[in-house]
Image (cartoon, rainbow, N blue to C red):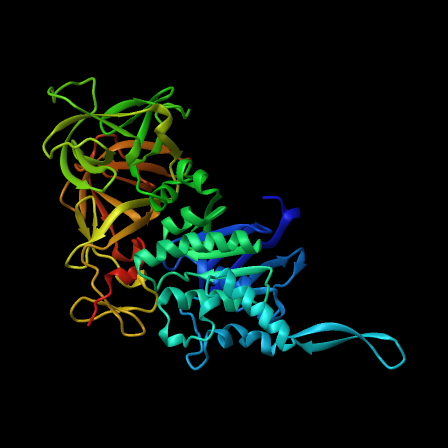
Length: 510
């Protein structure tokens, strides 16, 4: 993005709360008139970033520029920015008109007048009643509420209340509209309708929208640009198509859309091995390099076959089938692995199929070099994290800042809300330096065999593969041999967890 055209520029911005870095040295340029969505899981720093743009939080370090001017320390009311929150904060004792007009009635604007001697001077004046009427009428028309201006707030639906909140924000004609998960309180049907309406409002207004959400569908539906965040850092910035089709990391691929992600190895030029089969590809990496492979379910080609032992094909068995309306979603078991596929043909559970993927639909990425990411981890009924079908102890309170576990095993928020994490999908992350191995099996959390060793100058980088074909990469000072049988040990405090999606879906309703 060109800085010359940017309305907002974040330059090396960080925010620290009580010694914890929640936004870590991010830089981002947002162009005038753009619809930008900041996307990420709970606790990734997206809302804090929005609040710093709004002026509700001051960066610990770094600079925020508005049209090239430093606004880092300028208070919110002096910024040409308005915010729409998830909780609309409407005044229940005022009707729709007065809720929208509330800010206008308080606001003063500079007006040039002449004194008795004919000299011009600038004075601050309130809007006239006519001006307020015109501005409120325009705002209500944009949100399709012009016929409801006399209605009490309590008589409106959730979607209508949300529109009132938007009208109240845009009536002040801000240069930038900030939206902090404003659709979170709506039901699914209303949320989908409002996604399209927000996009239409953006076109009508022509101002910059900066939208925060954990919902990938919202991001893909509405945005010109998506900013994917993780643990306070920006992972990738791009158009929805770029983010979906060319994810920069396995994390981004897993977070945007449904993906099959595999540890893979380049076996030759433009050939990659995963699912125990060698596929042709178009990404050129070094031979024997360990890579991440991403396959979208819609890119898998299934063909029913009779010969399950054909070594020239990647063969699997359909183990699950879900009708999705326009297509079927199949889970196909390939050896110890699984692949999610989409197909319009009606197949049966138990069918043996071959799996093909066109070379340009196999997206290959360099592996992250400092950490293991287990994107298909989940929580079992005993509050253990399941990685490679093996239970690991971990600190579940990191899924919700300030939370605790009660005697019944529920996660309890600071507000007293309870969450049942049984079957909750999470992403688990373990640093290379946080894994130990011992010689022999049954001496740790999970058994495996060493499949690769690289000497890094002052230490060895070792890859251990389990029977379930999960891979653990670790750094060690000690020399090992390929094919050594080992046990993997990971301490509970060394497993970092992030919830997939919104944790509210696991809330216990009492």
